Amino acid sequence: MIDFELGEALVGLRERVRRFVDSQVIPREAEVVRNVSALERVRGELQAKAKAEGLFLPTAGKELGGLGLSWREIAVVLEEAGRSLLGPQALNAAAPDEGNIHLLAHVTSAAQRKRYLVPLAKGEVRSCFAMTEPMPGAGSDPKLLRTRAERRGDGWVLDGEKWFITGFEGAAFAIVLARAPEGPTMFLVDVGTPGLELLRPIPTLDHLTPGGHCQIRFSACQVPSTAVLGEPGKASSMRSCDSCPPASPIACAGWESPSARRKSPAATQWSARRSDRRCPSTSQSRTSSLTRRLKSMPRD
Ligand SMILES: Cc1cc2nc3c(=O)[nH]c(=O)nc-3n(C[C@H](O)[C@H](O)[C@H](O)COP(=O)(O)OP(=O)(O)OC[C@H]3O[C@@H](n4cnc5c(N)ncnc54)[C@H](O)[C@@H]3O)c2cc1C
Image (tube, rainbow, N blue to C red; front, side, top):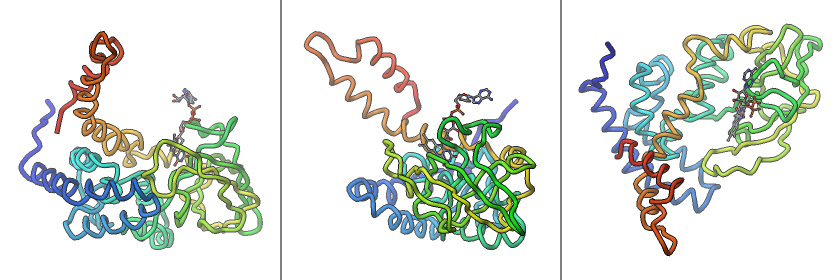
């Protein structure tokens, strides 16, 4: 039988994260909503505070300066952090860096670890993950990859287009999925490498993710042989390695579900107040089923 008791230490950690989010993170939300360009600075300041309070990097091992938690413990911490959209960023546990830290922790060479993973884990740089391509290229299925990687001399040349690349603007490097002769392959590409360009930040509802969600292009972009992450042709198995958690549940644990939970009281109150002249909107079928679901979610 699964024991769902959290235990004293984990309850204590949860309370510390909760206090941190309430006292340090939520008060900064208005500042970045009013002025999106302040986001990188606020993120840095919050990360410094999270470090000082021993709450930084909850999703990584102690060898990287993380808290060395189990996945169950991480879920509890992320649920608290995600009550603010800035919470996971403050703890350096937000996508795409969080997933990239895990991936790099399992497949980097010693040199790649020092150059890319260590500064990323410390929060000194940001990264992005570039897989999705405009139609008819790859989305969730790497078999559809159209971005090509060809060997040239001692290195590789990348050509193709990606979109919805979260965090690209201002990132130090991208982990890029491309089709090599051996199959889907991951490359570490420094942002600023000639041949890698930003086409546009794609307009989305989300304005609180540093670096936005971008469309980018690789045109004869040359990278050295040391840019290959793991082995050529092994990208699919690396992305789903046993110890790499799937990104979507992590995003849900740390972002969508808790922020929805924080907003549910406001949504239900609003819905109860809204009415046309005949009846409150809560009694109308679609709104009432939504509010029933919101009400059934645990409250803060
Ligand atoms: C805000 C935002 C941020 C994003 N950030 C990033 C990012 O940083 N990096 C990045 O690379 N992408 C990013 N994406 C893209 C996102 O990861 C893709 O939308 C996602 O991978 C799905 O791809 P798709 O939209 O092309 O849908 P598809 O791949 O066409 O999938 C549509 C549906 O078909 C299913 N499906 C697909 N292939 C198969 C198959 N072979 N068998 C059975 N079912 C299948 C899928 O499960 C899904 O339900 C972002 C998207 C958004 C909206």
